Figure: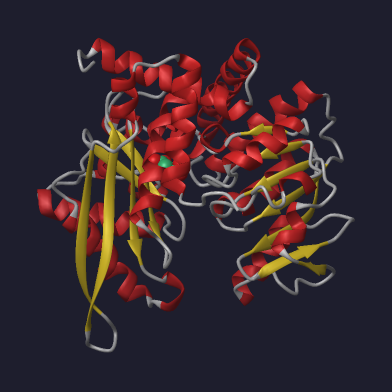
Length: 415
Ligand code: GLU
């Protein structure tokens, strides 16, 4: 079994890239660890009247290219090493799409599924208060991630604004449209991923019309991916899943109907007109495109050789281990690596920051057009590097992203 600590995996990926680029050891040392991290304890009054102390983190990985940027996860299994890995990946993510930002990430150990709306609001306000000294529109700008959403962002923005005694819309992105959010942010991660699928399909000679798709995870990214691959390309989504299990229908599933069903029942499981399938079996389905859109380490050395998809579009962060990467590459599976595939979210977050600074808001079609341009050129820069160095797409994305960060550090005189 391979190493599954996400931070050790992130460091290993970087080490590999350092070798390809022949990076100086001292540069590699800087890039292997976060610049700063803050560990906080957040006392929250629960509905039963008692105070519960939650543990939270904000990791600021690298700011050479601009203010740090990255989401906040609320998850019972959150660990500091997961947040470190995600912060590192944010650094490479903002770089690969060439937006003027660095990388960071936040996390709180909690189970939102077992908390009331009031408890979640008090926790959100408590968390942003606790990290308020190190975040801000020009320092570090959080956003949504697993189990946080526009409402969470609104509470945090409001709390931060209270501390500063003025509206600070730019402190956080992924806000509701009514409060300085950007058009097109809701489905941006999935839409950005779809643009890379379009380019990849062209590259491998796959006709997307009628192509079959399986999606693991049905949160923000997975749900929008299900609807967009159908509406943009006329693909057929044959299977989707969430943490409780999956569903399959060879004739195609209607993403919107599954979403409505999940909103009512809490899960996609038992959706009418479908058969059950496990998360494990879903990954190994004979489909054209596989979209992991949930959590880390789902494609490992144990199942990589059973994967039959031609294209994997990693909307999740860190779904594939390095050993699995080698197997997929040998088997000619075209992997669109996570920090490229899912960079649409942060790209539109960057657009949101720009609009907040400007106080002038763009139409949705402008956002889509600019997002498409960013994703398409990031995909082709990666493809070009993979050909130049004869390396897989993840290594290639690292090469492009790390080179840009190193160049910024060099120009700033930090090396
Ligand atoms: N949480 C998202 C990600 O992992 C978005 C980050 C952002 O918008 O800053 O890319």
